Amino acid sequence: MKATKRRSNPERSGATQAALIAAAREAFVARGYAETSTPDLVEAAGVTRGALYHHFADKQALFRAVVEAESAAVAAEVEAGAADGAAIETLLSGGEAYLAAMAVPGRTRLLLIEAPAVLGRAEADAIDARHGVRTLREGLRAAIEQKAIAPIPVEAAAKLLGAAFDRAALEIAHGGDRESCLAVLRALIEGLRR
Image (tube, rainbow, N blue to C red; front, side, top):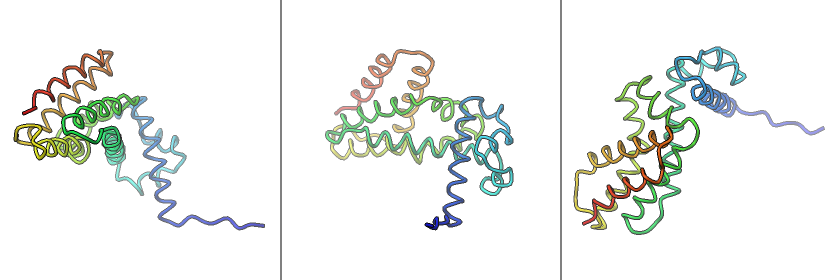
């Protein structure tokens, strides 16, 4: 008889956290933060209430982990979708990748509606700064270094362009025309050319 390998405590802990984050994402997308209870979360994750509170201080801390994971996933999709090459084209393809990433069901609700409401604007912005705005900031810096765009204040430009992309994602999520939104975003980026 073959012995099964027991998982270590860090492996079990990681699996429990992943199960809680996955179940919470699904619940927060389906019902929203306010309408999701901790008993709903532990039942969906198949863990005890004690396990929830062992890994997360409260429901808001679990929500923060969901937002952080979703933001990281969006940034990874932008990085994967941004074409290597000329800086403007990289910014354009990264923007298209962002809109595609935000089309994943529930992302606009989680990241653009619920996160600022639950965590506060400052904390939601800080999470975005580590992920989505970071990718835009890096793209703008590269464009300035390649002299594709005029030197501009990168932080302000990343925040303002990021807000335009967020607004486009919300517009598309509510039935707006994706191609029209993309055309305007392309014009904004093209307008930065030297």
